[in-house]
Length: 74
Length: 192
Image (tube, rainbow over all chains, first blue to last red; front, side):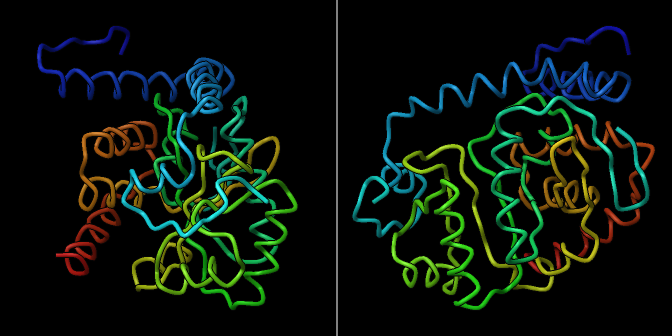
């Protein structure tokens, strides 16, 4: 599977990429693919440090219960 | 990555900040209760090209005293519970079957969503769990067949179908499709 196949349909296109990338992971060293993936993961965690909502707001947005009074750890 | 045996995978990936967050939390958790990670983090651990804001974990039923020891240890190690503060309140959430979330103190994401495994299907995740050995610790995850079945036949969102596809393609030489079908039937029986 050398080349990524395209599709006009977004869902199909996404699944084709998932298959393409999984094949890459299967056929390359763990170090190789993980270095590429880590750019995405680490950048997301970096962004999370600036997450603009409190824990209470986060849970409320998810429809989950929060009885926390203190917005920050005591 | 390679299978050392049917229940152990050696993963020689470069760990990222999410992996280290997971390992730090599990290092405390496993001292007090048995656990299995069940979420999309599994696909991400094995290279899926997406991020996540939470990691779902089942724990076995735990009594109040043991849970409070766990909770205090987590607090000492820099975690807090997003849902509540007091020992009794946090424990009561679990008792009511409500998931509780732990993140680094003062933060909301990423977080661990902790649930007690109660029904037969949930408890069964412990019996065929897999251990993933990384350079900085071991992570217990649900079996790959169970992951695929739940993502395809219970959750079913586009994201879940993509996660399942990633696992199916990556482990296509190892997956037992009869087992996936068995879980599919169990899911249908349990959840309709």
